[in-house]
Length: 366
Image 1 (spheres, helix red, strand yellow):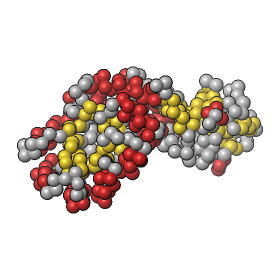
Image 2 (image 1 turned 45 degrees about the vertical axis):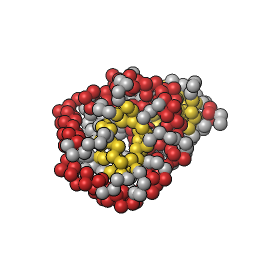
Image 3 (image 1 turned 180 degrees about the vertical axis):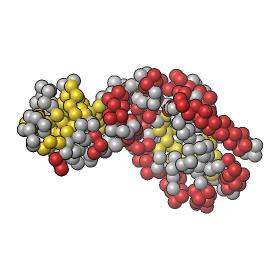
């Protein structure tokens, strides 16, 4: 593939490794890292990301759904994989592919208890305030009783999830969650004597609350270069960069329109460039009408009119460029965060929206 003539997402695995070791240095040798590679590794490329981290010795991977875990296993990943949100009827898939499900409700517990006939590591999720998934503290006795009814269910970890660990204004809330989690662990251990892994902290929790690191931390967005606080993001490296090219250049006269539904009407003579990337590739409609932008020859080119399925048009009236010139949609964390701010979203959505139609180009020096 001649990358100078295509839309593509470049994945820098050396930057990924640098970010991984940044977190390893923060947490010390006694705490493990669970690398979160759900959602196609936050829009990057899950298999290449996982293979690289596996070589670096990551302790666990986490994905949202069982299908994502199966995808990694079929690609040859051997490291333990936690399924964060399995469904009750996925017992056999978990066993066949050696995936470790989260038990987060009595419905899921009942299904796994009834259909597991060989050893299966399981993880318990408790709700400490996010109110998304998880048992309540009052459920501890019933959960323990359910687990004891099938000795094949091997409790491997108990975890919860922080609500706003990136927000300094919510420090009291986060500290309350940490305390609530500790209380759950203490209560659970009163009658359950076997050892299990404890993990609570996400990327921001790992950096902002050392007391929340416990046995293992779950690093997601941080692996890809983002830490929800500039002082931390500045110490991380950008992993994914999105590029395209100029397909065609038009000169639009005053009063003429560009794109569907006359989303842009020229107030003066305007030169536009059409780029072969659109909302089917992960460029949302909210980027249109001047809110989103690209970089061409080190200059900002705002998107004009509405985003099309396979194309966007940008204003290049003040830019010296030609058809075939390279275009940068983003290649730094700063650009992604500016795009997110301009379109009233977050960096997570910008990254995970990148369609799998966009080719991935993997680069590494090792």
